[in-house]
Length: 325
Image (tube, rainbow, N blue to C red; front, side, top):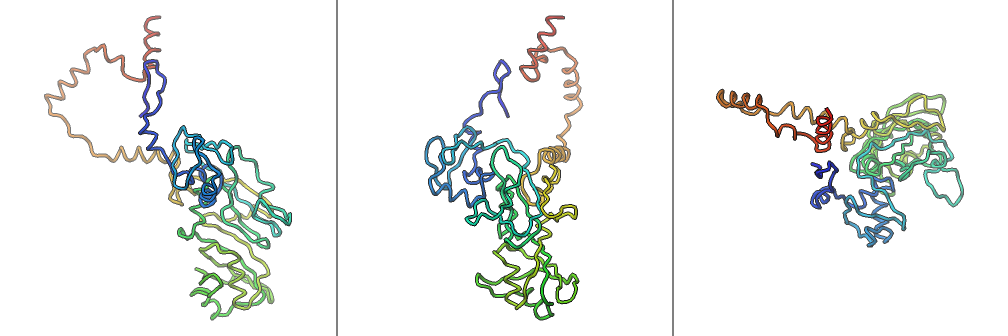
């Protein structure tokens, strides 16, 4: 609860209140759009982050009022929770999902809109020769919820093969195939038609391994001639989003995505939940008739202290108006 001075100005919070608002440093930096949590932990371990001019350590916490710098640059932590920005993009073949490329290939970040504070974070990656849905956000925590293996978020692909899968091959994909980095499998696969030797399939995986779909098909002796990601979690690529086009999601869709991820609700939704909670609370026990009558009688009596109810700044305005009248 905020405190006010006799002049009606808000006072600074108690130190213990600030401690309640503290947050892990790597999580706060990720929420500020500086990168993923893992990247921020490495940044802190490298000694490139300071808190109030002191070199930070992994596991440190920050609170409102702390001065945080990354590579000597002040970072605005943004303690007021705002709805993050989310942008969807239909990636082209021949683009790389990286900001730095020694070969100088075109990057998906080249044409993204500017962000005032923080930066765009790609939710997952797509290979150089793969096209389809790519999602960007300014919130590292949201990116972590959608990409971390423990959340098992579905990725749906449309894959065109040179040749067709038989029943044995499809069953092996569903049960698991041994790759160099462990067993990989698909959660679902259905034929989607085709012409001649080119056959389309739709498949779903829950891991984001490097070139996973292509390596699965190569293991079966088949060649992928085209690969398109058509869905990531609850977000499906709309048909209006042609190759090379991008579109920012409206705030209500972003809040729906946050709810789907189990993250904090938006301000409007939280307010509705609070109101619903108050409505569902059990009513207090009614006072007996004599006490109720005395309470009603007290409310009818004029009381000098009644004018002091409310915000002190509003009281001073009211008192001035009464004196002028």
